[in-house]
Length: 508
Image (cartoon, rainbow, N blue to C red; front, side):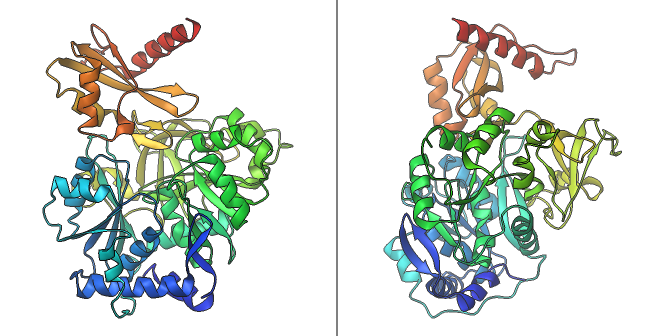
């Protein structure tokens, strides 16, 4: 089943409902969106020579044309490669080249950055919203290209511990299973409802697009293109019954700026992508009431490992309520989730181990990476790399995250990719990057450096190689990194040292 079939059906069943909006203005209804997608798909196939199974990248900020571009790629039978617009041009270029994308849709600004890099294999670079993009919509519409559930639909590029991103292969069946699980267990949606895309459409927010298209809801893109708390409240008042996917830091900002705000226009506030501390969850609940839901997932099983639904979050009478708030909930109904020891044996409730998952949302593997695929899917289970523990009531609590990953503002940052950039400086002998807890961002990046280098030079090096949000906020120069008997840096000791230093700064 081609996931774009949902748009075809909704265009037939609810043609006059708004489908895409920019701020408070409707850009297209479902009849118009369906027509645009069929025409754009025709141009992809007949003018740009995109064949079923070919990869088409979208390197774009949140813009209204994103919805049409994504569905047109699927309508033509091709594979979408959505890429985070926050990434550095070199990082975007790597993913485009690694995926073998032949066509790239880019938003204004990113188009010139990508063109300047120059990427082998790309035949066409088209700016969303440009006259060239509009011209592609002048073709005769084409019928939907049939695809099997196992056919690839979305290459989800997620950073790896090696510093190079890996493309998780998500099929049409994976996306359908994820969407139906969302509608069943997180956020029941009706025709005429709305979702605001305040988080990147290349990731969590965009993954929830399909469920809303299936149900005839309007996809609202903020005029800011991102998250501004006051704007989100205003859009909710205008559109009503609004949902959004937000990182915990975004929810905290909404709570801080929501004095006197009317929250009844929100249907659901889904949070995930990082830890939500219990006190922060309670503050959000005090404001939003029974409209909060939490999800835990990875790109390899998109948005679908466990969920903490609104009834649990709102059940203050439960004696285990605070413990539940500190968890990531219970497994989704369509997946199996267990915690295992180093030998792959299931551990008992209360014991910590690695979280592993299997089910219809789990990827088929990593694009062109057999070694990483074999490791991640060993024994038929997705090995998340996350450590967790189930309690006696079936709630899963995370104890640590994939190795040393830093989650800042809901975005994963892997230390090694930052370390490799810093080590390119001649004055840096050794470096270890960790996350420091931060009340606004969840964590900020801190680099412990052995050597002699100006922080301005290290900043410039990072800004020239990786995304700005991955750049260390603090550089701390030390004589030696703490290491074990095998010469491996002991990051737990480094984090303890950093915590002491941070407390000293706060007191001072």
